[in-house]
Length: 450
Image (cartoon, rainbow, N blue to C red):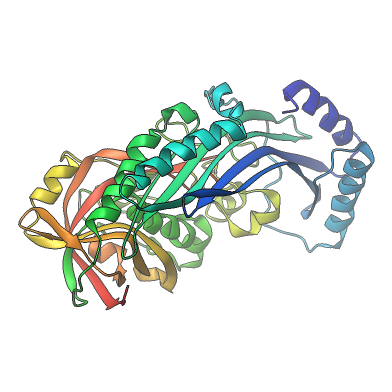
């Protein structure tokens, strides 16, 4: 890590040389390490220390962006000059609101010395314990374990000075037999908060229960979706519907529906980056303080997340969800999604099911089929089970689903008290905090032979 004072001293020196009307610098530095394992052996151990520095120059209503991964003074100065040159070649953007002014940020504990100090030997020891759980059943184990230390800073010529150091640790694991597999995963700022033994035991149990899977015809079934499956659905909906850009373009299922009831009143979805139950983070990549945004409140559509440009278009205010300057044209994105928990223990959800399917997770999801109607498709994976008379009776071969989130989540039977954190696409600044969901109706459109 460079540290706030040293980093700001270097970047402010460059900022002072800008010829633009307004200038912004976004710094993202990362020291990341990863241990991968397959066939119950570690096969890769890598680390990377890298930085990315974005310059955004504003000349009137023209905006230019350039980036570098070098902190050498000459390279920073050249990249600043490049952004200014690029701005001069761009058309005017009438929706660009200018750069933000200084703001106060909530103080959050986002850094763990234990995570930052985790060594390759430490990760190897953890992986050894994970593998030992599978070995007891003569299964193999595959997956990855990572830890990273990041520092993120935003500063601009109007006086914004935002800085936050963060750590994150994440693990995923798949226990495998000749005919089955079982999945578990976890993420936390502090690596000691991850119960690796419990996760490994869960993956092994799923693998053991799903051996020699049976078949079931595609159709409409009651389902219990565990947090990884719900997380994967929400991550897609985040891209195609919770973002202010598709909302304003009319392609989001929320477009024109604010104030209308869309799902069961048991469904509340929101983004809350200041909640420590998530991987909290205080500001966006424009240096705007993050705000809680309710997307669905007891099934009623409430809103989407905004950056400053999309907020100006919609005559509202930024919610603190801007992306990095190179992705500014994509609009805003929620990084800390929650689905509110219910009142039922997960075990009782299973015992209360007469006949249905338990889904651990999905893969190969696609949300572009019909985003206006929230249609998603994907495959089950690593633990799909038949439930009869309140008991898991065996594994099922994987199924393809094709269904509308709004339709399926209007049939909620119960939501679990327990929630889990699952990594999103950029876990340094957020994750998803999700319960298990019991749906009365979920449509499977195809089956597989495995």
